[in-house]
Length: 159
Image 1 (cartoon, rainbow, N blue to C red):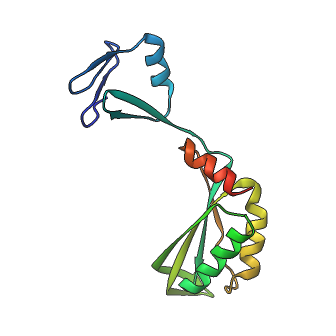
Image 2: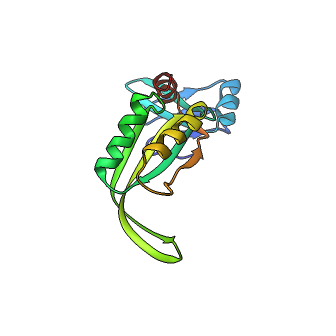
Image 3: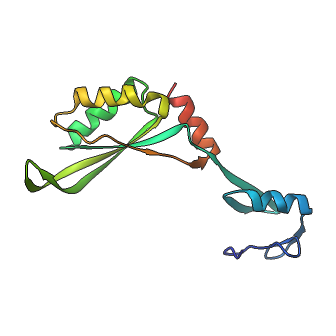
């Protein structure tokens, strides 16, 4: 596995850094190979191994809004109710879609809402109740993995 300035040589069980060779026990290498994602970070003479953690308790929700004011109102309401940890608002989205038998297009704002699966039903109720559209978008994407610190923050923020 070739990394920009680091090479992990599994057959010889060594990790070759630009000026350092680190011999790793076979059990450590077996553990590294079993991980889904490994990031090696060199800080001075220290090598830190960071791994992603399962994130199956969490979801990313997609909602579109007609304008930034509406998107901000929806995001603030969901945050205030502790239904989401974070809302990213992506302005200037151009949507093309079928509506009442015709192809339509409009400028919209995309909300990316990070939440726990336990909060999804309440979040959907809030969005449907406060959204100006007759049929608002509310799509849930399951998450599979993420940074351990970020996931801990996400869990804490959705309590």
